[in-house]
Image (cartoon, rainbow, N blue to C red; front, side, top):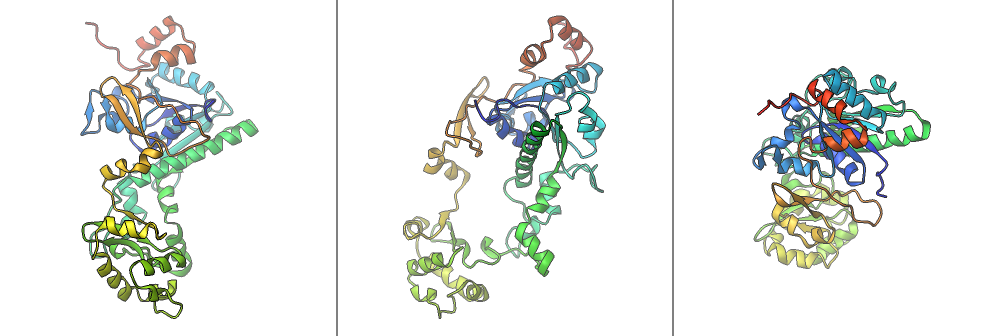
Length: 404
């Protein structure tokens, strides 16, 4: 069995952060039943351009592999009935909605424990379910600004800059998955479920890590650094070469000794050198870094990497996305996987980095909207045809298609 094959999650998720978190649980074997609200066309991620057609999109495929889809309107009495029947046999209810919505929708532990006292209700919201911003929508871009990330990203003379990837969303998804698994462990141990109140805001602020701790305890004021330089380790940044950029980092003194020798300046690493320790290099960064920059511009990126890598200096190219996906190490780690898709044919996707055991995970494409209604209603819930028909007439699964 895969690690989470005995876990069933009922998910009211959409777009990026929530689906990203449950993606890894599904890849580990959890049965993630994705509830899609039929009146709005389901998960908005299905329609994200530019690669979207007929309720399928490559954006949606990136976040929803290995899941099942059920169109269900839980605002209707029949839809709520189906949802509550699912909760009775589930381990967790997972959502990413605005902070005031889970309570209003009745998807918190207090609202569901009478159905299943072991249920874990994990709510990933923008700002959490308490506090003055709880009712505000939270998006990655906004959170990167609010939590101070953009203020420390980019060149010193440039504008505040967003990360090229939605790292608050993705980190929030990982945090939600971790919280959900901790809640499940406690529920199976104690027989009592719980709420998991996880937010993108909490995630973003906690990821300030040591610069935040430096500020809280020593008044440190983080600032943007030239060429993405580390705030305290010199040298650790990007350097321009004759034909591109590379990253070189000396996080230990032994790496500095190796780098100094590789660039033909072994005396820079001598104990009595003005650059011989972390502290001296930081103090004299203004004179040392221009010297290194001039040296690195004298050769191509490939030549420097061929020189520094065997010397044991931490370094790497600044790849494009295309180059990163073509790296031999990407293939060696099985990070690109393939599934069959009725619209896209052979669809290439990115594997989860979460690995447990030596068996390679199996992958199934993301579901078409409501594709798994038959499985969920008949096999999971054991509904018969007459009950399904009655629920359909009552609008539990969305407006009925007009007769043709």
